[in-house]
Amino acid sequence: MRDDTIFAVASGAGRAAVAVLRVSGADSGRQLTALAGPLPPARRASVRRLRHAAMELDRALVLWLPGPGSYTGEDCAELHLHGGRAVLEGVAEALVALGARPAEPGEFTRRAFLNGRMDLVAAEAVADLVEAETSAQLAQALRQMDGALGAIYRDWAERLRVLLAEQEALIDFPDEDLPADMAARGDADMAALRREIAAHLDDGRRGERLREGLVFAMTGPPNVGKSSLVNALAEREVAIVAATPGTTRDALETRVVLGGVPVTLVDTAGLRETEDAVEAEGVRRARVRAADADLVVEVASADFPASWPGVSRPSLPPAAATDGRDTPSHNGGTVAVFNKIDLGADVPAGAIGVSARTGAGLDALRDRLVAAARALTERAGPPPLTRARHRAALQETESHLARATDADLPELMAEDLRLALRALGRITGQVGVEDLLDTIFSRFCIGK
Image (cartoon, rainbow, N blue to C red; front, side, top):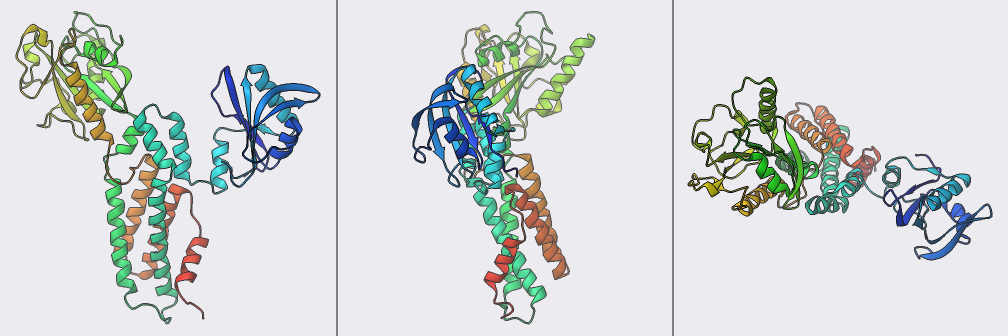
């Protein structure tokens, strides 16, 4: 880690009433003194006039945050400045002249990790917190940043270290006074750990879905009102609505929030056989989006009897076919919608009757989609996985544990336990030999 002093604006870009500029590094105290005079009491805001090279820069609120009890673990300062461009540029130039440099993207959090203020899981949660669009994403990021997910991984890592330490002891110190049932207990503990990791992986990717957002695809024949429903759910004009069949020829996307979950609604081209090359490409794209969607909203309408649920529809993509239920599943279920009920037709069994023109039934449809979004992202119990990186590392950990269980030689078991511990440590960024040595020599009276 570079030991120079860095600074950056921590508040949003653009002109504002107040801009917060953060400084971190061993020289931050000297630089703050040069700008604002004697250091204020630690963690107590003080109003100071900022000066440099005989020029007054601003009258600001100044905080001195000595390490290690700071965000980065280093000596830090915060300058709460007036948010004009001239003020920010003047203070930045003064800090550069005093020896600081602009921070690189993520460098404050990187230093916090390297200084032991947080693990990688919490560091990633900081990024998720900044990017959170909805209340559900915010809650997930805060829970992860508070250490709930990292605590699970650290517990597993500690148990793995104990298993590896015991296995190393059985190999290297067979004549020592070790517990007779150590090997049997190790097998049982290893099996229990495998079950816990497998259960954690079997989460329907809820955390990743919430972090990245869901995709709900509107499918159905032309002119059943898919675009009108998308406009109604988005509460704005997203797609062009016209009586001409085939108006929508591409997949149009809009972002909405359903039950605190970000959802991309996709308005697809009408599914039908066509000789028009452009429309045919739109139908192909509709099939692809429906196959990849977290949920398919299959739309029929009262003025198009061939679109009614229960009627054979060979043009529908296989992924959009109902699985026999009228509630969505995390494998890409289907919600059947019957539009244009204002024309007087009976709503087929299992479908939600709506009228995009009058608004009838739209609340029921929205409630169903909210329930689907929550079912796809919520999970009781421990916090879910949130990133593909975590999932890959846990899958590798589980694989090595399986190999260790089936190993014929104790040396091979120990090697797979070591590899499992290394894979798990990549999630939190804690991979090292010293922890293993501490575990070995604290649990066994070896070499006495």
